[in-house]
Length: 349
Image (cartoon, rainbow, N blue to C red):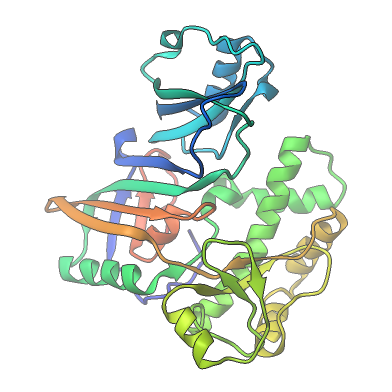
């Protein structure tokens, strides 16, 4: 994650990740229990080195249904071992042999019926187990940084995956806003990249000022585990207590049409961070595309965080994150982590 400030100061390590798919494991945390009835077959699938869209296409062919009859809660990394849920619409409740799906890349862990199609974002979060190899750095400093992250949390950056190879999605979004025609699926991706870039700018300004996890005058608060926001309202002992126990978080804008909700110092910071020519063009494009102002928490705290040294230079990290949050945000606060699956790619700093 290049060109983003660090909340905890100088890097404490350098390492590589994804030397093999097993070094990057992600398990979806389901948001609901299957009903056991209905015409949507829920499949919990473990995939290795496989793209989510490609697996969905494979499921459609297996079931003999259109690709739109297959859905998933979220896309998962290809260069990884991931567990995720898919749904397949089978109105006659007749499923082909599950054994036909088995391969080196795909393994069905469980199947059950449900009465609704699986919606995007229908997950409680993701659990990560990452192995960093070739770790260089002082062990005591690394462990102190991990403890600080577990205790205080970290900036809730949008990860580099959102911006495409070499960050090309933002220039592509500007070209689209300038009139270049794109496919509908590309349009959605580019709108998300534009929004994410603006949010990261505001968060970067907060990190540089050291108030990414504190309160500014005119702060808009987001409830933990929710998209609900409230405020601005004057800081109080009650709000400070809720902030300290991670019940609420300061928030930043997901750009769209409408007025910014923040006021005072928070509003001034957001306006200043998004005042240059490129930001203004992204803002205008998002407004013209019909998106509305929303908010996103500026900080996150990984849950169930632990680490283990597998060898002197091999570190295993495990933690869970809410939906829409990125493991690369955690790695960013540690130092320079190169992605071995992308030969010649820059480090994910």
